[in-house]
Amino acid sequence: MRSVEELINNTDPGWIYVQEWIREATNKVAVLPVDSMRARDALYKTQVTTRSPMGAVVYMSGGILIDDGWIRILGSGSNRLLRTLPDWNYGKSIQKWGDVPSFLLIADDAIGGYYLLNGGGLGADAGKVYYFAPGNLEYEPLGITYTEFLLFCFNGDLEEFYQEERWMHWREDVPALSGDEVFSFYPFLWSREGKDINNCSRKAVPVQEQYDMHMSMRRTILPGK
Image (cartoon, rainbow, N blue to C red; front, side, top):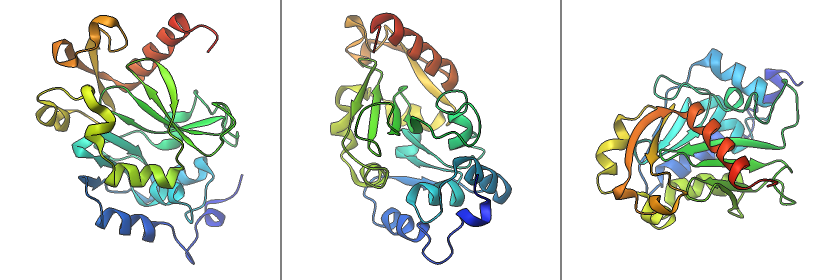
């Protein structure tokens, strides 16, 4: 594994570009404060350089919140979002540090959807982002890179992307949610009865609990996928 010093690029740091994109963002963006020691640890475990946007986000932010936390882009962890990008992937796509992961969980949303960067385990389009949709438990290819994903978060039409998955008072509910929690819905969003989110009950649950449940249900409902 490369040392932290080898991963830090002071000549052409990617954070300069990320900051510019944030300044020009049309969606609400909040950069969480970074702890230097946690940032160094997260960068080392991720093994990407700070010249890349992903390395820059990991090293220079505790994470990034979009629309008051509707989307949480993983960085090196903060009080509002304790998970780091590498630690959240440990035990999922990473079994030991230094592994080349078949995918990386890079962000998630308040309804239990997950954004993944394909490392080859999701399809032939390595380097592209997928969305694990809680409405159908499928990995949906978005056809965009990590950089393009950031721009989508900063400027994309999230109302159109999420369509019927934002309930009437989501703007009041989401800011109170921890970055390490998601809403669990009943009936389940992937069920026929759960198609109208305004008629579903919801409660905040730990994101790990919801992730495990979704993976278990996917194996049951979509065997072999």
